Image 1 (cartoon, protein in one colour):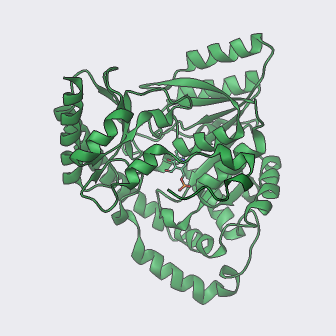
Image 2 (cartoon, helix red, strand yellow; image 1 turned 60 degrees about the vertical axis):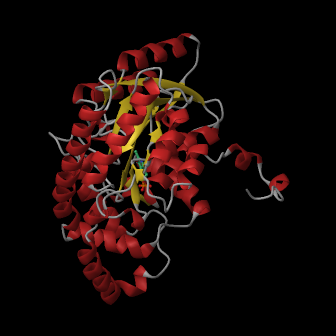
Length: 404
Ligand SMILES: Cc1ncc(COP(=O)(O)O)c(C=O)c1O
């Protein structure tokens, strides 16, 4: 533990940021013989390294003077153009380059959007559970949170509407909904088309913005990936975020926003203060990767691998978890989410699991109010298949002992 020598100088905002006890716990396992189902990393075998090497040579030969130079805040024109094309493959049409903004991962997109739109006390809706790092950005904005419980079919829209009605009856207005409708992280759920339409209708009726996180939209490996809510949006109230992290390589730190031009202009103003622009070099490589179909050709491979790994994990859970546990059967993405018997406190159980050689993320981290104590998130994309089975076997034993 470092001495708190400089803490008196910290801004109030910084003191609001907490280090996570879970992260600290998991750090202790680094370098030890622990099977980690806690991470959120893609399988490195999915990185098209040889293609990236060839493209990098090409970019340096042909674009060095621009690829190594400062560039436009909203992104290089070549990539914005390619992202218009890539978006159309997700069903988002009727947009042009001015609706696209390139960011340092979709994490930066979420950071900027929540800072641009959310003031302390604003009424913000999130799924319960939802993506931890997005919740942390929101927490630092100090909004009034409203949770929408997740069912097997995505967020419970009846409950959502009920809460919207209640707010209205109190004369209050919702500001924003943050939603991951496809292969949700961590819940593993996918909202169907009817649900997507209803969310958009509610946004229009109650006049709020939707931030739609489509991190796993290209990673649906079973059935069709439903078009994002953005594809249905006629009013421009949906702000869509996408990422190269799961379809090319997270090390590129590249993501993007699709939004109404006026919103893009606000993001541009904000980003000038953050980092001027996203690195030019990786943008040139990503643009070329789309142009050469490297990403499109890679996606089926990634899907196939993750489907296999999901099946291995689900089969092991079926075999080793107690019968009264429930778990998601994700049609895409990288995670299974488990609801254990109420008696289990997944946070308290973690040190024991680590001792026995397996790590997971306690689900309470994914609830804005830290409820969901009996839940856990399990990653299947990174560990090798045999480790998935072994990890779940050990975890099943730990859970059963805890229940006994
Ligand atoms: C739902 C979701 N949104 C956003 C991100 C951020 O990813 P990146 O910043 O790498 O684009 C992740 C990463 O795991 C995620 O799961």
